[in-house]
Image (cartoon, rainbow, N blue to C red; front, side):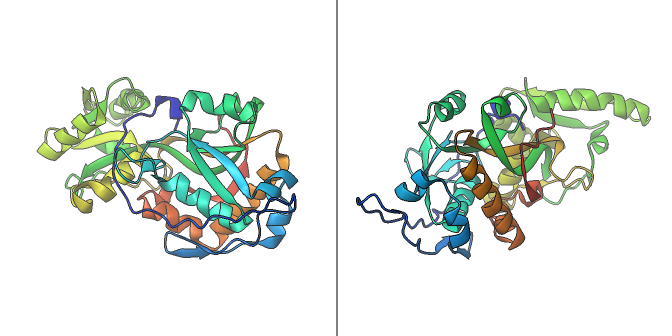
Length: 314
């Protein structure tokens, strides 16, 4: 899911995750100290001393990984309250869990998306978590630890009255989509599949904003809304307390259609941090913590089973 094309933002307040910060001293010794357990998505995450010991010395001394993020972009990044500054969201929760596992604080700071990679290169941040697509061009200047794979998803009315399970089930029906998006390109490309299957083409209705497409879905003017799968999952979970919409799960495209990996970007100057983050993430995947975090935000299907590194598909 290319972050540069994502901006169907849904601003929703959600519960704040408790974050226990790490104490520090000024004597030049290891300042991180044993981190207290952190509660994330109902799970207690404890420090792994062996992983902590592999961190770069500067991070062990400061007790902090400086993380850039572009807020808001639901469900990955959100402000706890509209107009506030406190951050939450899938990336934030996962960052707190990784930090707790490593025994350091993942300190998130808002940063405009197009400035994130340059800021990493300049040493202003150590890492970035902001639904960033892992691609080969970005790999030239940062390393990625991939934690999700997401593409386009299909949002339907609660109960899925038209029994839509695949993209070709949309053939012959009116479907909403935001204009000038990858999702519109996806629907346009699907028209050939409809013709090949002997079905009528999709009646595509474009809207200036995805929220307009959602209104059309609510009113029955369209049978589905195609948008990024994470946004679709979050909308299904939160709109009218989960009573308005449903996310279609296609077993052949668990991460969404045309899915690409999203990664935690880490400065190439900190290879030890990249390795430590990868191992911490894998531990959270193995013990089920990561799955609970993704499920909290309605996007369990975009989670990966293995914490890969630099797994771009472009």
